[in-house]
Amino acid sequence: MKKTIWITGGTSGLGKEIAFQLLKKDYHVIVLARNEEKIKQLEEEAQGFNGRILTCQVDIRSDEEVKKIVAHLVKSGHPVDVLINNAGLGIFDSVLDAKTEDIVEMFEVNVLGLIAMTKAVLPYMIEKKSGQIIQIASQAGKLATPKSSVYAATKHAVLGFTNSLRMEVEDDNVNVSAVNPGPIQTPFFERADKTGSYVKNVGKMMLKPEYVAERVVQLIEKPKRELNLPRWMGFGSKCYQLMPTVIEKIAGKQLKKK
Image 1 (tube, rainbow, N blue to C red):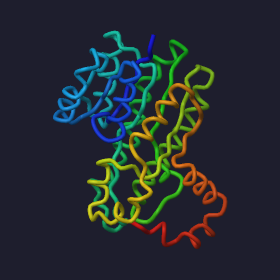
Image 2 (tube, one colour):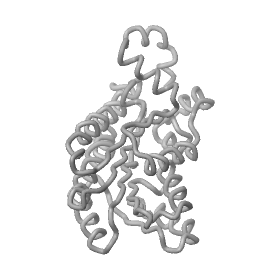
Image 3 (cartoon, rainbow, N blue to C red):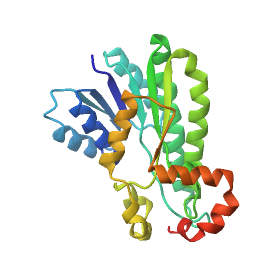
């Protein structure tokens, strides 16, 4: 029997692409999102998949909403075999220009919402001694760049949380993975990059959402600790961790393309 995959933020961008690739592979998919209009649009687009997709409106910034919807879904016969914490946002501003409300929202969605979803599903996974949690993090969580200090901070937090969680649940047969993509061609940048300068500067190296989604689906079928995309960027972030001062001097101009 095919697994049931839960995806947060699955109504657009990477999350939506992951959902459709899973549906094409006969998985059951539950999409959790807060935008009602986008949920209705997704339902219309997914009508041909024989009821193997279920959508739920929830704001992951609300711990109570998360607990209620998770309990309701499990009680209604929808197991959480795999949770993909994909919901997230970024806003590229210098520290001085960053608005407090934007800072709070990024942490509420990218970090606190991700933790809330993880905490809500873990008891069910631990009870059945089976499960997988995939956190969609970012290369920004390893190599921070100017004008993305807050966004990078949220992704550093996600990686720290993920690495600790992995050790906490390893004896419960719950697999925990982090996905660290570079920039992806999705609507994410419509809000993140208001000036359009970043997309213009790095457009040629942006990842296709179809490719990233394909690799995430492969991660479900063949779990591993971490997935870095593209490979060369993952190698670059490792070099940065080893010799940050040298990398900042060598690649200074490249790191300031926002």
